[in-house]
Image (cartoon, rainbow over all chains, first blue to last red; front, side, top):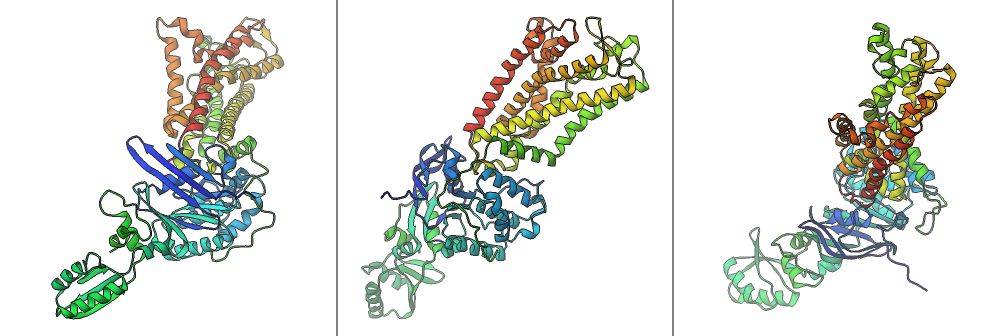
Length: 321
Length: 292
């Protein structure tokens, strides 16, 4: 029995615009049922990647396969695939329902029968007869989801779906995506809103300057970062020197009047003994949790060279401080 | 947005569309979109208004034999059927190319500017189907505009000067019913160079991705070709200019019918239109949709 191809399989994807390399050798596999976070700062290449996945732009090199099909070959490759890149766009002079009727006609099958359901799902039934030109940004985002749902997708690609929404709108959008995922949809969520990704996604890829610098689960990323400890003492200067000399303790850094470092439990126990023996009294020595935000910034900021960090990588752990 | 409504029954289990949309779906919805856009009515309004202005102008200052220095102008006050033919002569300069360009130049470029191209390209349609649907709508609009203009001119002209016989360009008298038939046949032949203008508009629309540039560019190309026709020393190229083909219909107004200009119009216009259309298609098929 053959294994069905994954919803998204990207290999060696490159997109160049003249001298600029927007996407630089991206490899990505999104398995069925994943809610996959595609993270990166502005300009990292997220939207360009999504455009290639949806067949809107052609890769300079590499391949994209959606359910095993090439989206640049023909429209059939997008069967069962829906989503939007950047803000969803509609014809402003037509009503929401008219826009959906047109898109349903362009989807074929029984998409038109799902218009009412899609409008209900995004709670736009009451505004269905209004021209889209008068819609707020949030309403357009929701209409974008409705337009995607018309296709009865198995795979949903969403580019920054919560951008521009107010807090309530963001919460509603998260709930909707969660419920769609629970309904069996595979979701690729491009975002720079880390809380959104942390709440929704099982796995993430972090993109920096067109390259993936981490790919895996958020839990593995956090594990790989090791435990970060916070130290406050009577003599921080001597404490820093002792930390530096202590085996198993990472390079200490200053953070808000405290010393932070990475270390395992045994090494930290030895460190506390060394501090006391050296006459440095400890005010505070406690582990602190590393958030996805810490990890994200550690992987996407700093000097130009993107580290090829993965779970367990010392580079990830140290950089997360 | 707090709950997901129950998914209707019948959704396909595999990601495969069994009943795919086609060119007809694009054509139908492009027509619907035209109904909502002001430029549609601007062009059609112009096509209706110009014959009416001609009638008013003749009413205010009736043409005398001093003004009959172009075909059928001397007949304007004697037969209303001269009106559409005179307008065909005048309209070729800029009016009809502009009306046609309003839709042909805008039909792709406006989608680029509004960012809606990516919305339709991520559905179940092939790019060539979208192109064909849009091109057919641009041609339909041009046809409607020309026929509407001609019909208004016939009605307004006949109300003003009567449904009377017409003198052909060969000097023979053509009965009113036969003249009416020749008017509509002329309008149809007039659509041949108009189709070439549509193709140029489509090319500029895909190439510039800017609605204003494509509309103005189409008009400018049309005017430039006409300018070439009046430049001294270039009379040799006149038979091959697009502007010359706008007079091909006059072959029907001769006795016997002169088919030579009509046949020439067919292949000369094809030389302008077909490469422009093919280039527009190739650009549309291959281009990256990165904006919007």
